[in-house]
Amino acid sequence: MSAEIGVPSSTPHGRDVKGLHGHEDVNVGEIAIGVIIGRTSEFFDFFVYAIASVLVFPKLVFPYVDPLTGTLYSFAIFALAFIARPLGTVIFMAIDRTYGRGVKLTITLFLLGSSTVAIAFLPGYEQVGWVSALLLALFRLGQGLALGGEWDGLAALLALNAPERRRGWYAMIPQLGAPLGLMVAASLFAFFVSHLSAQDFLEWGWRYPFFVAFAINVVALFARLRMVVTEQYSELFQRRELQPTTVSDTLRAEGRHVVIGAFAPLASFALFHMVTVFPLSWVFLFTDQGPARFLMIETIGAAVGVVAIFASGNIADRVGRSRLLIATAIAIAVFSGFAPQLLDGGDVGEILFMVFGFLLLGLSFGQSSGSVASNFSRRYRYTGSALTTDLAWLFGAGFAPLVALILSSRFGLIASGGYLLSGAACTLIALAINRQIDGRDK
Image (cartoon, rainbow, N blue to C red; front, side):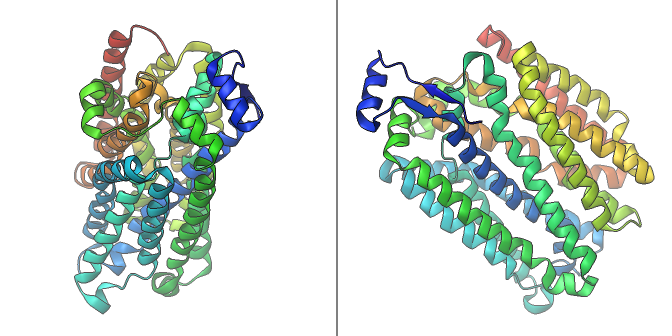
């Protein structure tokens, strides 16, 4: 990822960049590294909270109810961040327009860091009663607001600088953060769960991953901040028209693409939780197997997901992104008909579920972010991409663990397959509409 894309010196843009910076190259590798760092830190924070929602919060915050109900309460608070994300985008886009991207990211850094580290100091129900749940909800809302404001535009800048025949390859780069973040988070929790007694883990062991998340978020945000405020990247953002617009203007001009973009990746996002958060809750609640073992299975599955995401880039560049997404949505629909039941199939069933699930997830998730984003005009791409991301996570992922666990606990694992099937159907419908509107294959 060290390739550079030259700006033609014969254009005004090329002459301006050469005059300002003494060279004409845009280092795409540097942008890609910044994107991967940012997404990995975001997903690591996401998975640390998600794993704690299964292993910790039901006992720490909701000990007065049965484990299933406590986990459902935890998943309800988990969803608050996804509800807050669009609001965070509205607030921080206004800050971006008024004070600049550097000020926005600095405030985001402190809000996300303070919210994450505050969770590490969360008192339990035995210490403060119902206030524990209230504090957890407030900290989770703070994380959601910060995640909405964390949009730095580097992913959009990377897409705009992608060679015409390598758009699929560059579209998959930001998606690598998800499996990488899961691998680190799951491994870290597996270490503490396997090396500490249940009492020590619940009292203090679980808090360490949140301190690590705080440190990673600070380092990652400072690294990205260092990039986006430089003269070179400020010029690139301006030349590429990656400037914040008001949410209302963006929705009026590009609302159709925002809506389609929010629903196009639902198959990927529904599967995302079906192979990450939900199966951990099912195994922990309804089997006699320890969480450390399944966390390591998830780590292996995430490694398969990394390989599949890389493969998605090459496949999309050969057959077209839309064709790949349609094929994977159909495959996910088939997968939903039998795969969830594998979670009741012991070691072999769980491994098969995770490996095949992450294989499909990598192929679909690797291209989901770029399926509609390229439809945005340059003027609205910065804000439009942020809104699309927020809404896609809200509709496709925010309530997925909660809904899947409710359905499975009441009607069996086959019901969670029905939820996954609905996501695949939404993706196929959204992609069909997008093809009609756009009239060309991406």
